Length: 594
Image 1 (cartoon, one colour):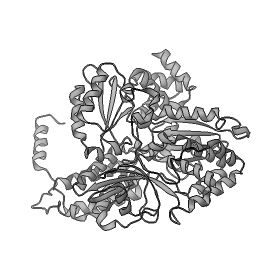
Image 2 (image 1 turned 90 degrees about the vertical axis):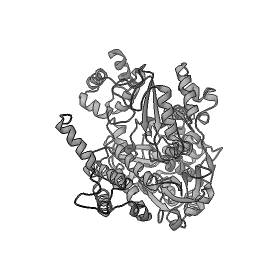
Image 3 (image 1 turned 45 degrees about the vertical axis):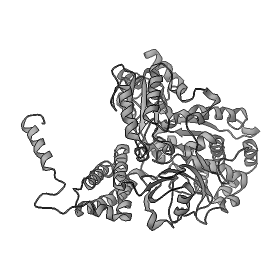
């Protein structure tokens, strides 16, 4: 074992900032990361065993004990539960002979629940040994497990024709509507970059600024301003990072861009590096998209062969390289500072801001972090011009953007729309029938009432959207959906700050009380008060938005809550479970609880 670990450490030049890659490599070779491996890594990287375990135990996809020859992760999402999730879950347990969270007696299979894996348009879905299977049914589960037992690999099952079939054999792109910006065929990347390098970096930044594009990850910060700050920042090195940790439930547009138009994204990164003066870039790819890594590596190699990456790009003195940093399963790493911590081999704990990454980011150097869609759009802006882009959309929300549409509609998938389109227009476009509500921007966004707000416009001045667009018709129980969203935030909190760590749990208990018919008006008041406290005092975006599923539905659908609350009778609150308390007391007397 020690020799193998030495070899793995050598692959990464004994670099402690590559700890996540090292842990991932060891787990792929040995099935899990053992205590012996932890000790050896600590010695080899000049870390303490506690340092190594801090990273190892933070991420969902790492295991510190034997975890089965075939690791199966079933996506537990709101959309999956609308489409047969429970039947698929039961079939997995029956066919593998083990319960979720465990390993079967032969050590062949391990079953795990996981959050959204970027496939809401084709759920239920699962990952088997990092290979994706979509549109699951009990029969499909039986077939997959049978083939695995017979020795067929997950990759061969999902894609029997090998590389000739490509990613599309495993997962559909479901591009329903193209516009002027994305998924354009026949682009001459070399010519675009040659033209870009003929300009001064300041001119490139001016073009991006003129376009009016704002970040497509959710915050909406002006991209031109970020690049200008990066250009002006002082540091012996500068970095460009592409945030491909698309973890917001209901969002999958970045997955489709990376699989369908990876060159657009890479070209955008190169242009950003030229603009700010960076020599190195990182594409941070979420673990759930591991099946895209080989495709992206091949595209990087092609860019190198074409002289568009590496030293003296296209015969100039501009040098730039990109490496892929795999994540290991942590929604919080969608936060740019948590992502940077992860790139440095640590747990994904958000940093306190300021300083901002553009000032002090990766390895303490100025770092420009943009979203996948932002980089892809930037490559088109440099091709067509800033005025071309700004002519689309609205004055404050220029251009087009991609929507990831899922839920109760006839045509889920990817839609390119111009900013300014109304909610009702989108619902008509995707074939939504009798819709009640739309969750815009995922659980951290806003739940809107179709009846009351159908005329609202998607733009930064009205209904901002990070790309997630989940539709629920009149048959859906919105309070059950809120409970699932709150559970998601509890599971994904990094735990570093008390408002999020404790407040999320408390609010989750509140919605469970509401759904159980044991909440009072006081409970609803506390939901509002505690939600405000979390928004104002949490360390990062997860904590500041975690109460929004409760707060926005309470505002938009107050009758759903009023129908559930009860009036206290006697001295005990309805939330007090007398039977459970007596049972616990009995266990204490019997010595079962200390």
